[in-house]
Image 1 (cartoon, rainbow, N blue to C red):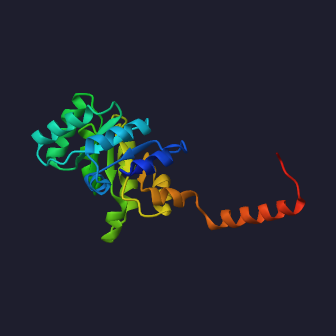
Image 2: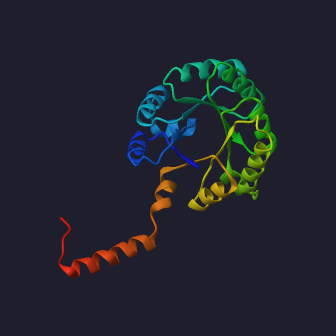
Image 3: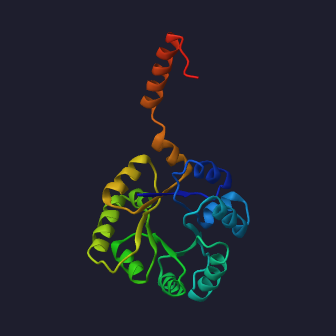
Length: 218
């Protein structure tokens, strides 16, 4: 499963990109606003740090404006993926952008029916929001399973399932078990994937025992 970082914090992205474990980045208007930077400048800088897909979201809500914004964003760098909402206008824009060979991430997906339409529109990625469904007492992981099952039934559907709205490491593991192609997560959750108290305690114990030997390796 590919791991994307859900962030517009250039410093954070630079830090984690250096691990070699980040396959792409997703951004959205809220993350861009939090960064306090110009969207084009931020996306351009992120694209220099990450070789994989970088999702840049349109803010328009109608087809014509989505197309204008999508074409502008697509010119920033070759690895920019245009992000559109899962509305009728968003689906129309997705289809038109894909006909221009521009990759598209259809976001704010909350049902398998929506995901099926996104795939038929040619979406490169569809982003079901796990955490937001959990927040209203729906099973977000069940949605991932349903979408993956539907897509596997039809070899003509090439849309990748991008699990979004990740709230904790268990979501990552569950999304992987459900068959998601990609998971996008905040830097905080990425850190939690490797930071385990038993690992830290074990390491300290080993180092203490090694110090008693008085030996060095170099």
